[in-house]
Image (cartoon, rainbow, N blue to C red; front, top):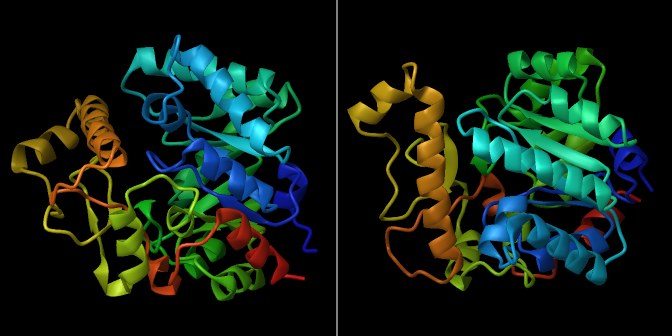
Length: 326
């Protein structure tokens, strides 16, 4: 087996992360990917608000959701904490959720879109590890200053929020920081996995590949679009969150926002504007997860679609990828 800092920190067999995805990270998918031997990250808003673990309240729902995942696998799972400024009530909820995750035995955390110093302090005090999503050297250095244990390097082939640099450029830019680096973007098969490790990455994070799985509860049309699409079908848009998001070209997608939104995003209200855009997008994606068939749906996916040709079990995919490294 391949041993890296990621396998050591996460306590898993294979240096592969099934990334957190809203709204795609249903509990059955999280459990199935973990059972395959990699690290699988639960997305708490997806788990509670989209997939039914919101009763009698969100905190208790999260506990029940984590325990449900535990009933389906005894392998390690991780937790995604989006900590961007813009809504104090949300950040208070996320703080409570991190404590719940720690109390439930989760020790691997992935932070996104904020300053993770307080998360690191709390997780480290319980013997855990924090990896931070980054797209630039500046974000990476801020993460290092906050005490993160690893960096998830989101490149220009990623699904969801994407970077501007290639996997090779990101590694060259960040290798001297001395932390484990995880390649996120464009990984869909054994070839890309092997390429990333040969470059020097300690592991990979995959998202799109795990949407096209039997355990994922997204609409079949979404999975079919992933399987049938090539790289040329992928483009980006800022209409969802104010930050470039990689999507499949559909009738409803457009790259840019109206001029007024662009003005708000460039001014003092940018954090609040992005929060409002995120909320609207979350609602759109939630409707999609319930089977909406609108032609205006926007399906997030990365350029790894070109390597995905079938819908399979997440457990099977994870094991096949991991065993290719033996």
